[in-house]
Structure formats: C-alpha cells, structure tokens
Length: 136
View 1 (spheres, rainbow, N blue to C red):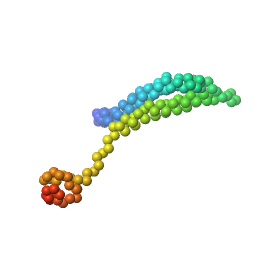
View 2: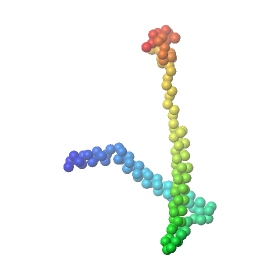
View 3: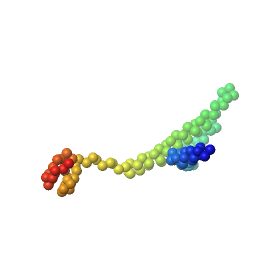
View 4: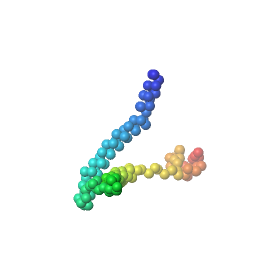
C-alpha cells in the first residue's frame, strides 16, 4: 500500500500534471472572459447595427416536429464572433508581442582570435597575418 501511494504522489507532483491543471484553470477563466466579451459587448453592438438581437424564437414545424434552427443560428453566430474576437484581441496582439521579443541567433563566426596578439584571423588560417604566430 505504501508503494502505491508513493507512486501516486510522484505522479501527481510531476510537472506535466501540475502544468495541465494550471492550463485547465486558466483556460476556464479565459473562456469566461471571452464569453463575457462576446455576450456583453460584441453581441449588443451587432444587435444595434442589425436590429435583430436574438434568433432563438425561429422554429420550423414539419408534421408536429419542431426544428429550432434559430438556436442553431445563435450558436453559429456566437461561434463566429468568438473566433473573430479571439483572433483580433488575443492572437494578433500576441503574435506582435512575440515578434517584438524575438531575437535572431548570432550568425556562425568565420573568424577566430590569435592566441598571441588577439587579432581576428580566418578560421582556416594556419598563421596569424599580424604577428605570424602559428595557430592551431
């Protein structure tokens, strides 16, 4: 019993499990934020422009069956708004920030320093051009 608890403790305290838990919590909080942006700001803005705030009452009845395509339209529009909001308010600024922070790696050097006079010489040089010291 003690061995299985020790293994469980190792499993729980591994970095991947903790990272995943943090990611899920942050993702849930971010989802709430995006839903609030869409439902509280963007949807009323679109409703003010299009003058149709809600499609949920649209229903198609065929032989007593009701197809609530209005709710589907609401979900489809919400998905589109969420996708646009995430792209323009998260992805685009994040890509710009990453591009600003990106540092190009230094190019491979084509020279080395002479051990005697410390001047720059070609990598394949066998003697220093300045002090004629043999270099390896």
